[in-house]
Amino acid sequence: MYGPGTVTIQGIIVESQVSLDCRYIQTTPPTLKLDWNRLGRFAVLPMVSQGSYELVLPAAIQIHGVQPVSQLEPVVAHFLEGQAVPPQPPVDVDCKEEYQVCSFVDSRMYKSLTQYHVR
Image (cartoon, rainbow, N blue to C red):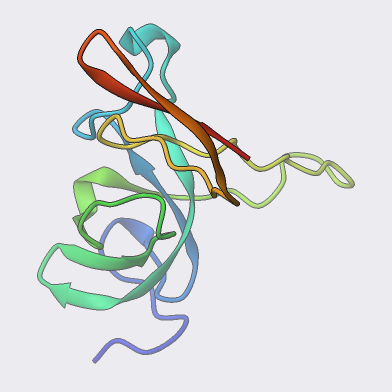
């Protein structure tokens, strides 16, 4: 059985933080050179099957929560005492940008596309 704090495959601890390799995730930067190598700090839930874990992903990242161990890497807390690592900016997955809209001010047709002016 796997309980909280139990070390499992590749040193991943249940209920700890891991980063996700984004080689197989489609993101919006124009080239791989400009893209992040690893995504975020995600909490690990118990093992789903041999070699795969479920992650707690934010709603903005619309990928399946179960990821193979080969794509996960334990997150190192802090490199130096007193050093705080700033959080990464949000990532656009599958080329979909999302915004919160208060109201629509105007709309128009431009080159057979509908454009909206929003607040």
